[in-house]
Length: 330
Image (cartoon, rainbow, N blue to C red; front, top):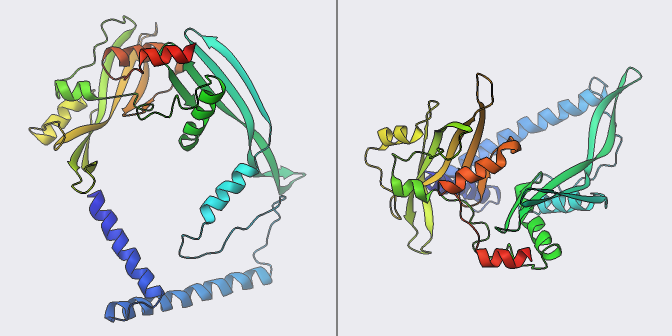
């Protein structure tokens, strides 16, 4: 389904661009050109009305209170506005950086405080509204377990985590390529569920503080092999949800004979709800989203150790090579 939608969108985009650049002259192109011409006249009228409203002071402009940098102009796209904006955002961050660290059981936690990009916000000053600018501090947290070679990064956008991991490996471990291997982000797996089948249950008997574990959502991806590249691609997906905690059973009811394998299905993600005994009538609930190969997302970090133990004991974790991890720990 996604591939069909993407192909349809690309076809429409190509057609519109060919009409705009006068590369097509058939009936459909003339019809589209007439539609665009009419739309341009409506837009022209709206712009003129807006300018008139500003000229007669019905609409009033406001001063932002900061320098404004205008990058590019409205166009079809692909002229490089986005990377230039990203470059400016990086360059406008301050040079401020403070690093603190502390140990927590078998992990070393590093907190990096850095200057975030300039932000503007409206405030009330003397009964009047004005816009001010300020620069907040951002925080990134790195938690490294020397025994396993596992690095967790939070408080920073996902697109920059690999960059931060590379800096950590080069600076702290003196091994620049430690997190750059082909399997460095291959941390989590749902293969245990696929091997067992849709009757899989999460074993938590080893931890008396866990009251129960529910599987509230699961995604099954229909996969196929691309004959040109031999890569695995997702053809379509099916998501089963069950607030009562048996999403795998719901998936079984929806599919009737689902088979896991290279040319059949694989699990895209699974969401667990873990109930921890709290000493109160209602247990404390923690929701965990496992999405291979590199995501196990949850809040309530006070339960992190027990949650990671639960994931490891049920086969949801890929551990790094022990010898390599020990070398990095040294």
